[in-house]
Amino acid sequence: MTPILEMRSIVKEFPGVKALDGVTFDLFAGEFHALVGENGAGKSTLMKILSGVYPYGTYGGDIIVEGGVRHFKTVRDAESAGIAIIFQELSLIKELTVAENIFLGREPSKFGVINWLELYTKAGKLLKDLNLPINPKTPVGNLGVGSQQLVEIAKALSQNARILVLDEPTAALTEAEVETLFGILRDLKDRGVGMIYISHKLGEVFEMSDRITVLRDGRTVGTNEAKDLSVAKVIALMVGREVGDIFPLSRHEFGETVLEIKNLTAFEAETNKKLVDNVSFNVRKGEVLGISGLMGAGRSELLMAIFGAHPGRATGEISVEGKRVSISNPSEAIKNGIGFVTEDRKRFGLILEQTILDNMTLAGLKQISGAFVTHRARESVAARKSMTDLHVKAGSPLTVAGTLSGGNQQKVVLGKWLLTNPKVLFLDEPTRGIDVGAKQEIYANINELAKQGLAIVMVSSELPEVIGLSDRILVLHEGKLTGEFTRTEATPERVMAAATGNN
Image (cartoon, rainbow, N blue to C red; front, side):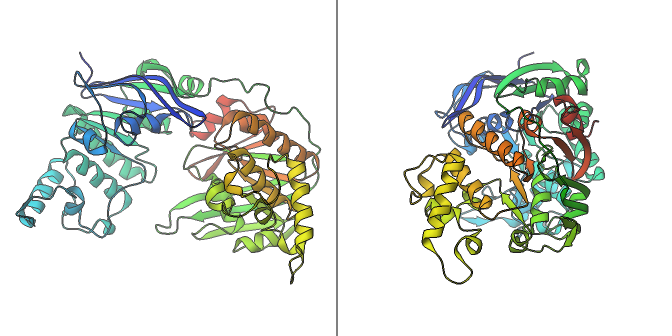
């Protein structure tokens, strides 16, 4: 049998990073083919190439659909070839009706006038064919997340999609909604629709899949029949790397507990869904506490809630050095000795148009320069010392932050928070988007800060990084704490098992 889709030797590079390195993948009609891998393995990049988000000419290799080589320059080109992708973040317009969303940009019309009767009739027939009890005249915003997900599928199939890509489709669904979705997908499979399923939930992967392809570091590790694999085998294929010698080998002396969190729960602002569910932990002076978990596990939301920066409601107890504190905004977090190197340094960590000096002294301005009048000389001395300590490569503190490399920008953000003299430092993806050399320097900085007695809480999507740097590791899965390991207990397999809810 000939595949309806073949992706041959796909290569995709970004500045300084080879995201895909000769990836191969194929799909048969009526097949449910899972694509799995760690965060950053290349899954979404591969699907963006397939769906025309990354146009022909920006990647190497061939896409073959039903026997013919295709060059997609736009998303519309891929849709015309029968390929539809449903991203984790839904693309529906909540103010429009279900029918309007399904046929958006393709409304039946004559002389520029929409035929509303035909629009709603066609949408109603499509929903009925999919056994979806949804009124096509209902505004999408009135539907639950699960029903919205099903509307996305109806929208894709209205374009006569023969290849359907689903990227983490159950991330926001209840168990009942997942069962409804799977019923629809089984029906589509019987109709001959080929489906590519991206998910970190390995239980779902094994429940639905005919074959499973594993990506690791931008390469195809293997494609196997699902019946020939186990959860443990897939996890081993996903992580299959040695931590290596790039992490500083050291033993940290732990002191008293600096930060204690009890029963913290954080809710999504709009839906009130639990993003963090009753999590408790502590971190000690001189300790590096790693927090691991897959995308959507609630890692960043946990730190944001503690720091007073989470947009939704949060409950629980926070104690700093044994004293119960109330933190409702970042200013209060800073006053209580908490610093936060955020995941997106360009959006939340830096003012790119300002100098290194202005960025570094921003959070600790009162301590450095005084409460009422700024003292520029003191600021300059503090910034220069921080640049030296962190090995920031720049001509002077007056260098504009936006002109620095990613690694040096990250050091400036780190320096900014260190100048607040924190008792505990949160690091969210501290080495994202920087090269290996800069990573090693950041690792050395983290190790040295721990030796000096700073309590550090680090979130990272890179398993070797978490295992190589942390004295203790907490693992989150769907907002819940599912594992805790000491440095000697932690292995990639054990951490990944806890992260996928299979421990």
